Length: 300
Image (cartoon, rainbow, N blue to C red; front, side, top):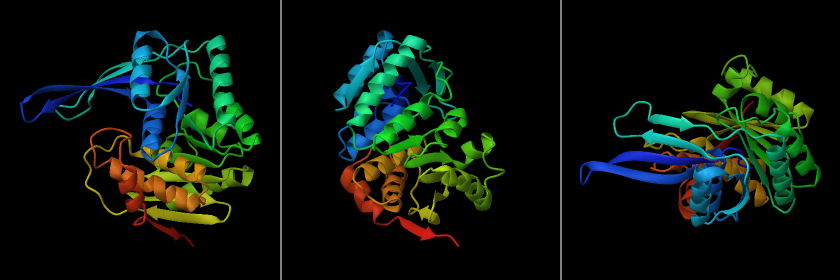
């Protein structure tokens, strides 16, 4: 589920020619997650609005990367222009997607539900802008999909995370910063994050995965809390690590792996992605090999 696909245009410096270099990608959280899942060998179906001129271009680029699209025509069309030549904040222009009206929301819901019922796992991603997505919209979809027996993995924040976290889904992933900003945790300490997670676990959530930047991630389930640590990797670009981690977790769940092993695969995908240029990119053989070096340890 990719409710806000974005055409991403990035300007970099070609160091050989000392000249500007322009890259055009299908972007937005949902498509970055989908791209990494495809790199890990999954057959990916992306459901999202791809309307307007830029939406059509984004859809073409996504399909050229081997992604199958169930595209709705209303909404979409967002664009992100980044200049990464001089450091600092690279975002020059962020054009939000067209707001989704009642008809567009209904169309997208039906499209996503039908696709999810035929899948091994359903992944829910969020939005960067206010595009008219109600807080309970993804929660309703999560409830319907989970009731059918398809496991749901969600990577959300804010109101969407609060709503979906109350449903009996397989995995919800958030960052510690998102949990604090959403007033779900008092602070970013392990104990505060664990206490917040345990409330959701008691309500039926299968697992909460909390990413913590350079600190080991936390995995909280009904059986207890574990840390997930990866070998240190030099960072080329930190963006996309969280989406890559989500993709790895979802692929692991689809393969039937235990939660700890699914998160181990996700952590490997996220760690190796920061060592690359390009969000949501990586090689399956390297990620799966690196996953064997990821350490999962139970907390007392």
